[in-house]
Length: 250
Image 1 (spheres, rainbow, N blue to C red):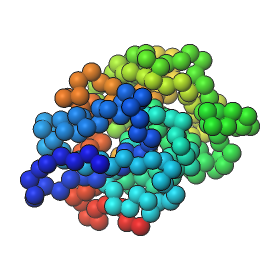
Image 2: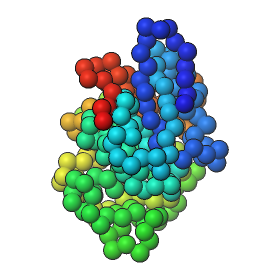
Image 3: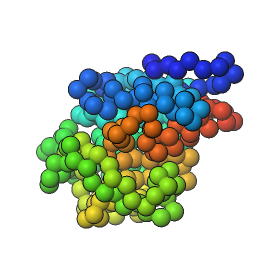
Image 4: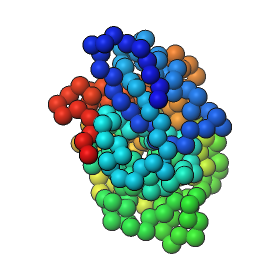
């Protein structure tokens, strides 16, 4: 648990950091200073709790949370747990931020449970699958920076306040482009693309906050100034925490 001391009349948003906490994943050391900075700079109060994907059996395991952040660090201990985290957030209108490996598992969940692609697979977990939705990148992006072009009128544009951004990657896999059209046809919107037009961000129109990025906003240079997408997610979780019926029930 990451806890920030605040006045007793301020109710924090409770978010689940879903993933396998590791000193070997650079992003994981940055959550505490980012969330502390959100309180200092924005008066957005967030309590974050780490949850391994292996702890997630069904939606009840996320009861009481106001937001879900599926964090980098795949392969996860449980692909099913990562998918459960996304499905719970999608179906229960919980704010979701899914970054790097989280982005890929969000696509996997959407393909399986919205597009009826039951056999959609991640090549990292099932390299011999007949329908690999997630495949190795032709050129490894780990350690690289690249421009992302943002679609107008999107949640991404609203959160970033810009039509382009330069972001850092640590990924080795991506969406097989053959399936992008199917995901779009079922309602997923790709709102960030690289210079070649490959999807780098996705969101779900009509959901309070459902935003997924192949890049890692956690790796922005200055943790004292949290990335705009992190701020937008925290604001959505805070709204969920203090709105009618706040927190997810069992």
